[in-house]
Length: 438
Image 1 (cartoon, rainbow, N blue to C red):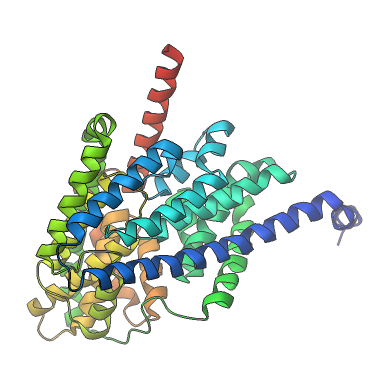
Image 2: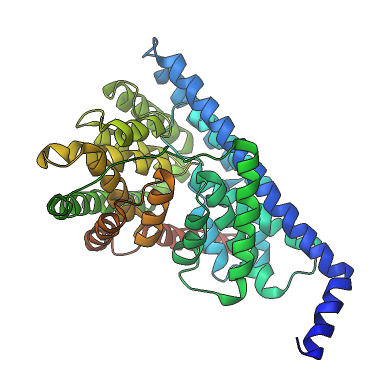
């Protein structure tokens, strides 16, 4: 090692400020792992309690769900309006030129804590939402909030810690460390930042190991063992890619246009709108036999393990319930519901390829639909591969994701999260102009 570099390294090792920054960073990633685990356990319990409560009481959601959405809407508007929705669009918006005051508001510790509580409450009242996207928001808030306690380098403070939190949050939520890194690069930043890459890697490792220590070593959907013959692979890729991409692109368009066109109604009649969304969710739940409430994890796991898709209408009803839940404006993500929709969609396509295992179609359907929704094929492939611990269908899964992305882009030219982030920026700019005018 050159003498000059050795002296610089020795100064860094002796620097109290440098060690303060390191300790803050490690403490933050540990806290991300703990928070992701706490949210996972609380969310699972909330969903279980609601499902158990409505098992013999099909009328209960008509009371609990509208009332729950009403309470969540009031609390969100009153205290932390930036916590609504998935949270990933807000994090993306904070990466791209937001001022520090807005970053402190959107990525404040209070926003993260509140969002976690509202996710649990939303699942407890039957909303079709996931916790994984919100975990990204919560983790980014934790990481960014730590920068006020130490002299972090500018590129780490302004973008690096947000990316670290996002990657570590997804990694801890799904137990998918590689997917967390790919997600930060492909979806969150849409660029490769060499200066923050090692920091992202370290954050993912620490947060992931913390979650593993608390939850044990597990695979999100268990180990899926399936296969496809070469001839069946071609048909399965085209089928799942075309249908998954088309339905995923349609879902994204509904969210984007619905968020734009219903924004005025939500602003002028927020509580009436929340009650209407709650009643609609109860109707969809009744039509599905209570299958559309919650994250959809059990339905996805069953489709992957047994090829049991739960009926032709489940993917469509689950899609409708997820759209209604998101447009209601409550905090809640779309990751888990999208995976459930995709897995069951693939299972429903299995009869069109009688020689192909239904479990293989479920896995490709999951990857195809998810890639159609987020239009990030690498992230979709890595997440599905790590969640199922199955690499035997890696090439068909990659091909399916690429076909799905191509189809989705014709229906929804702008990727979902980035379109929603643009909408968030426009709303913030409009509110700033109104405040200035008043």
